[in-house]
Image (cartoon, rainbow, N blue to C red):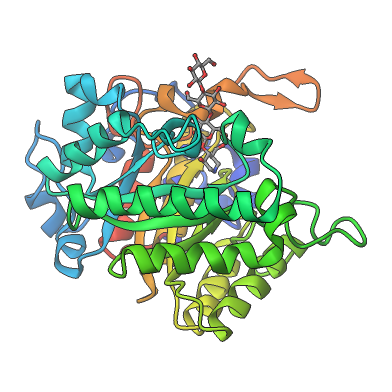
Length: 405
Ligand code: G3I
């Protein structure tokens, strides 16, 4: 365990510090936990900082920190999922524009939003986000073209191979050509297929590797290759990704299933550019551990693919948004973001929401089995007043090449 991190744990509890591999001499039991859901500078919160002189120079007191130089120089992107309504709030819009270089529409490009009725397309809310990105010199990840969820009822109910193929083809062609023609060079990547691997894969004997959906039912497993080919034919410049959760580590049936599908696509010459790891995770070094994640990135890089973290959040349900939780959250963001950006294959890292109150996790609350916990997920890197949480500095340090390990 890095002594710098152990020093930082001076504010934390003995048990957790020991669990993380720090020795007793690292602990200062005189320090107690305080509520830290405020825009707290990490140097005020804890005694250590990875931040380098260069970073401090670009972060004058009282002003928002800017994207690190390394990010700008290497053309790597730091992204955030946004919603069109949020951008109407000046504080929300300002924070997005200042802190990030790539946007993902959280819901506005999904099938139910864009094509609510057969052949009837509504780009209003998606265009709001893409136009915002364009006006602020940002890129957009198109999320998502083919997904079993958030389909309109008519599409869910569609039967027959020809009808489903025609609907999927028209949907992909219409969406991709819309952004290609109306916002040239802005929507640079698409999650072409999202979450197609069966979550029971590996856990239930005989379970299909493919999740049941209108696409897999009617088109068979070839629907993935078909979708990528249609997207590529429509916009050959767009980067095309397979995106999923629970495939971030090397092990597990779902991860193996995804790797087998993707490597099969590559071997067959399907135009796939990369894999998106959603990374909805918690504050401990598991699910995946950082070393496991690094190994998994490498096996996709060895296929010649790019990788991205597409939807990162770090739920504090299990521990609470206290000093300990916030510090573990910073550590977790740093190690995972570092793992990605340490690889030349990593194109971007995106978080799934701007501020803690914006997170999709709030709709589920914090549960342990049937018990409602007295904690909040607080999974993102800005708090409710757009203050930078310690987690923000975890990402920042990771982008600056400072990894807490
Ligand atoms: O649009 C309706 C609105 O008309 C209605 O009044 C309101 C009432 O509840 O619901 C609105 O729809 C909600 C939608 O978000 C927009 O707010 C849906 O109920 C709700 O289920 C939906 O949740 C989204 C979820 O995907 C759906 O699966 C979350 O915001 C979104 O963050 C989440 O994102 C997914 C990624 O796309 C894929 N990976 C997992 C990730 C988290 O689940």
